[in-house]
Figure (spheres, rainbow, N blue to C red):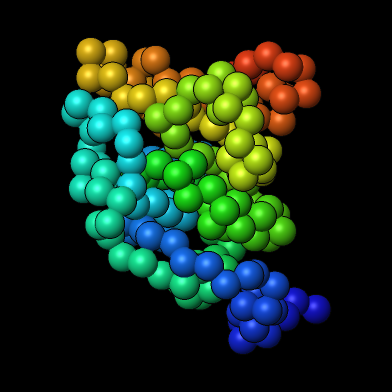
Length: 186
């Protein structure tokens, strides 16, 4: 038997540690930020400042709205049509602890986790920051690299520019080499 929404929310609130997160916004039904219908969380704050960025309002670390993470969970109600969550921005790897909690929650719901980052895969591995690595391990697909306006190609699936890679995180970590995620059609 599934818990009621009230019990589910109460359980989440008692399991997560109190923390604040700064968000630019969220989309409860996105079809452009990964496969299927997804929830996309736009984190506030980005240090990459890519020319041509479609979310420059997310750059300022003091912009957006600050929330208690438990309140964000309340906003992300269960919807059987949702296939996963996408962590976007801004830069989710600048708030890795909160992003990690969201990723863990969606995996617990049986959903997949995508993250967009302006950092390169190689940078995250070399840096080896414990929180960022925990977040990386919790992702199913990582779209890495800064948006490059000169490499913008119309019709790219789930990417803004051709330099960005869609990385199958689990396979890449297991094989110790980048394995790109490929859209399965049909």
